[in-house]
Image (cartoon, rainbow, N blue to C red; front, side, top):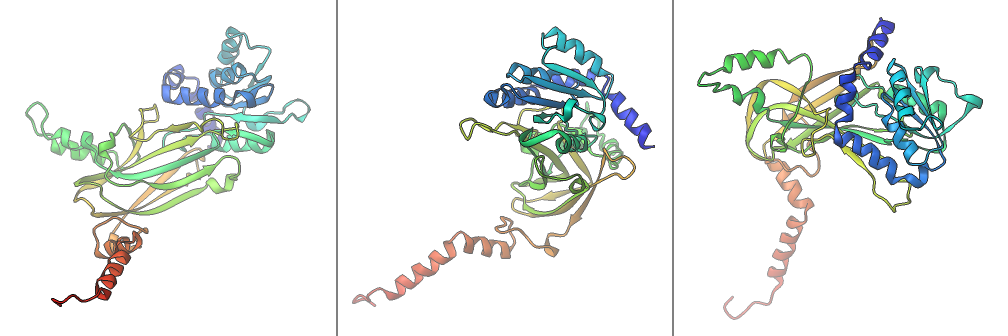
Length: 364
């Protein structure tokens, strides 16, 4: 079963429409180019590996930045197209396309590389991603003091409204389609909905589900991620789902002289081909501003298909769990704690003491 799934996985990347979508994704492609070109001094005369090179565009960026050798590894038959594109750009003497899974690659004389570049991210970062392969490449090929591009990745979760799945069906050319909308949402209960949300659709602060350090994390640490969160609604609205997105940070090798490039797929950033992943709730809830919202999300590798993750969401009664410190919800306990923490409670006590110690005037 694993072999069949792997074959299907790699074959899917031979679809040119997928690569057209990725190349035309300006925030994605420009982030990689900017990260590589901002570190030109590092890439100059270095040896680089591009894991899952696809059409080879990231390998070409590395060659343009001055790399003396780029090993462009591609498991699918797209490797043959990458070879032609490399020739088209006159980098045949710098870029060597290797048609193989990176796990099977053997470099001449046990060569180690100075950097590993890879665009391995899938929907909600890890779905059908190739992070396992990237970490295998790191352990096999990256020399001490080398760099990973990107070097960290973080998944965020926040409560949200979903007007495109709810309110837009209340009036369709003068016809109420609420019953249809309810069935439509029910059909989406078994997998995340990949869609674009607006910043205004987010109802509360995000929580970090996981942060992955590509320089240090081991394969076994990728098996499961879990986070429990309580947040205060930032406005009144309809709580209809949980929005999941990710960001990746690239290294700055200029000793602080440059800037660290971030690839952000959040609703507040320009849309990417990853969009956002949404867990659609079975029933919507009306919430008021500052009302507490609590949930737990778990992401676990599918034992049968390890390039995929299963997501589980539990909606929690906010009264039964600890709130973060400080918490901005409207419960009395959180209001008192926040007041104490921001110093206003202490200042009030000091003000009262000062007034008590003042000299009485003749009218007292």
